[in-house]
Image 1 (cartoon, helix red, strand yellow):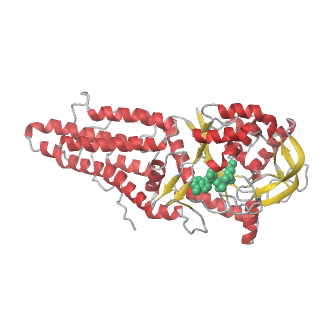
Image 2 (cartoon, rainbow, N blue to C red):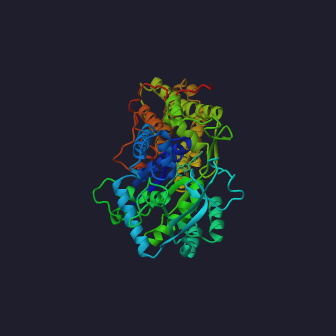
Image 3 (cartoon, rainbow, N blue to C red):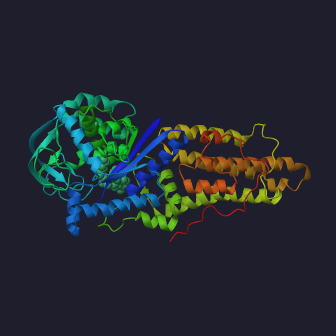
Length: 511
Ligand code: MSP
């Protein structure tokens, strides 16, 4: 089965920030998990390059929008590789194939009689690239997201007949799993219940956009153009880039993972556009929360922007992933706190998981000739085997419902319980009694086996740490065997060599 997952297509006004890194890491974990679960994944990310915001950013730099976009798009592309993001498609909305798909799509919507010329008047936030619903004192009102004044617009634009789709949209947004989490769903239901208004899909004052065929000076509204990137991305690496080809390549998307600020576009405007063009709507739109830093909104003026690349070079990929996945409930707002970050990494990854592996492997090497002990007792039911089994069941259930923090906690709890098992059984005392050797073998084997499973379960969450754990156990993930099969208890090979232990993660210092 094909599973299509998307990040938002990021504006190229600036390089990636912690918010974009957050969304992309979450999508990456889900994509990796689905691949391990045997699905044929298309993980789409990319950049949204047109519109007034980008046009102005390039003007301020005194360069052509195209060169600006080339530069920042490349930064995004390289950045995701630095973060070890396993994306399959990277879509640029300035590419030729995308433009031709936008045109084809527009023709379909036109053929449904959903386009007409009208006058667009209203208050616009260039940062959001969105008209706001008549805020009071609009001339002095600042967009709460961008902290900038709105701009008054009054121009002839082409409109899309969104109002025609009121009933269909009501039905879609009420479907149980279309919008998640549920609090977000209620916001959208309220918005739609106030009655959908047609929205403008072209601009006459923006030269940096895809020209609308047949209308001089009109370019497509950046959102009308960008949302289609999810579709054009599918056929990005072929020469046959028709809408039809993209659709057959995997559409509809299984999930659009986005921030809560752009939910309306994805859960209301986008499905209506798709229905108008005779295409299927995405199966799910998941609106995650916003990240703050030490309780404050991050912003240039506040001087508290956390550069994700500094985090990456200082701490590495997996610690940042672990914090973002485990400490923030997907859907809720989250806060990045330096001290909490250091504490969590040290407690969970260094002390709980790292130490478990290190001390058990050292004992095994010392007592059993640098090897995994030979365990003859694999058939007798044991506590760790039972715990591992229930952990795997819960982990799969929770991953399938995008409860990633709970997934991470499942793995961590297995490590905590494995440490407990070791402490309760005290093999370091038993080894001194001659007749206890078989019991010691069994205990050590069980702990190493549980650690192997912990390593495999960490594969979609912390790919680098996961492979370090498995290398330390002399047992790597085998690509040609189903992952779930490799999670079966008892696959660690008795008497196999254990490499010399080296710490899988260094403790962090709080500065
Ligand atoms: N270009 C549009 C998306 C078009 S999709 C067809 C866009 N781009 S964006 O770069 O401004 O935002 C991308 C995502 O980053 C959004 O989902 C937004 O919610 C998210 N975030 C921006 N700041 C954020 C935080 N501080 N925290 C978490 N995510 C945040 O919108």
